[in-house]
Image 1: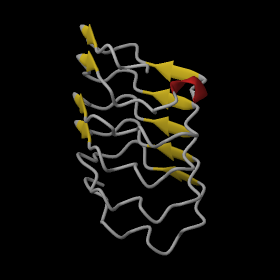
Image 2: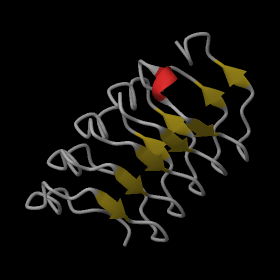
Image 3: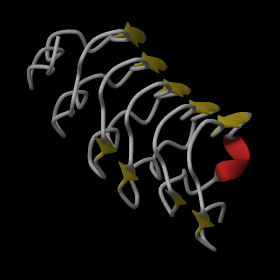
Amino acid sequence: LQGIPQRLFANTPELQQLSLDGNTILDIHPDTFNRLSQLKVLRLQKNLLWRVGADVFGTVKSLEQLLLQDNQIRIIEPGALQTLHKLRHLNLQNNKLKQLGSFLPRNPSSLASLQLDGNVIDFIHDAAFV
């Protein structure tokens, strides 16, 4: 699976857990998850994702766990995760992140775990945890 069809989950609004790990997904269209209002766990580890767009997860406000480890993520656009106020576990291990910018949820105190090891982080923005 290299890509996720844009409206694949349009008829599954009650879905609470979704596992798409171990595929070859390169990128995610902004409308892919917009109907999954009950989604709590999203597993996208072990794919070929290279970026996280600012508008990919914005409508999945119920998300509590986001697993993005073991991808090729270099870029997480500003604001990409800022609306995920219920996010408790974020795993970004073993990617290619060089900078930690202002993409985290606006209330980072809700995070119980943030895993960043295995990246090449050399800069942390002042507003990364604000």
